[in-house]
Image 1 (tube, rainbow, N blue to C red):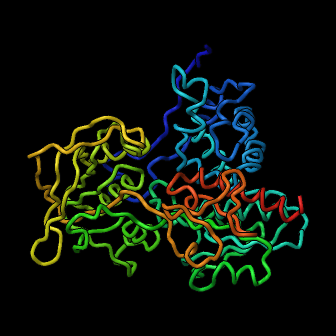
Image 2 (image 1 turned 180 degrees about the vertical axis):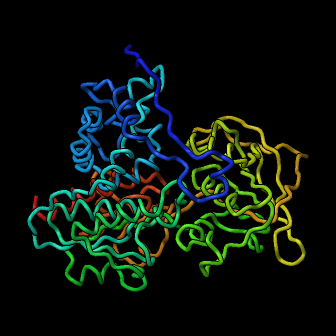
Image 3 (image 1 turned 60 degrees about the vertical axis):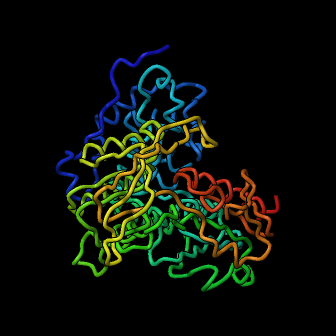
Length: 463
């Protein structure tokens, strides 16, 4: 097979001992010369296998080809045909398990840094001047989008480009959903997220914040106001817990609450802002996904003595991105693997005094495909911590499904919708993203929003 004549270009980043004490972006991005050099590794495969791994179908070979020729504006135009949020995706998408996984080089070597090149082009456009995509002539149709996260804003942008009037209803005071409240600024700078979300609004999308659909207004009331269609992209923001003794003690957070205080309410700048986040000297984060890594790394930046990741399986089964695991370890976070919490201890005053755990061993694979953790008798021990953050997953908020007649849900609380079109069991209502699939990735939610927008457009045009 072909072999690149030079290695993949490394991403410049802050030194671990420096970044562990600030909330500035860890990865610093490619300079233009390095980006072009990395782009020159692309073989320009005719069948473009990498594109099959992209949930929004970006013409990867096309944008990389123009980039390596030095046509940055042309490269950006190709990118924006498919992706309305490229600067965000270039930072938070798990490219290693999607587009880059299918790169020809990945078979025997290191794939082209597709995500890093996407980020470079998107950042270049932001600095040089954003060129908004063309918007079709008004159709006179009106669509409501519920939720301003990745799926909702993608659907909104595409629907606006199709020529429809779009109004987005957001429960919080800021747009972005998980992009705003869930992902820390050292992975996704606030200015980057805000710029791309504002670019969606510049397409003519109207944003209504502080509207809790299901409370302030219902889906049926929205439809009665003259909307021709509704897209539900409310995500999966309801935290899960282990249901072990002590989870109601002071000093126990859900990852959702902790990250929302940090990211949306800027508690890391306390006392400049009024929202506090109170942690102790030793912190345990339960879980091993990207949310757990974000929680642990945010906690570390608040200057405790120690931060632990507690996970009941081994490193091989950890679902977080490899880069996030690597950064967490570099920054000094300790991984307590094959370790399962069994109870949170009370200090006698209603606060956390420790985390009792049990050692585990791995058995045969379970339904998830990962080896099932099995308790080892007589191995209980107490981890000396005074703060516990639960980062073991989320489920959809039931508010919208419970207040919308005719909307079928699964036993897991997700909305039942067609996988290709996003159509639900309720007439004129579509859904996509985590509210349908359960917690997934930003780019998968965007793909669902894009497919639903195309289906809504076809419906509104009578096709």
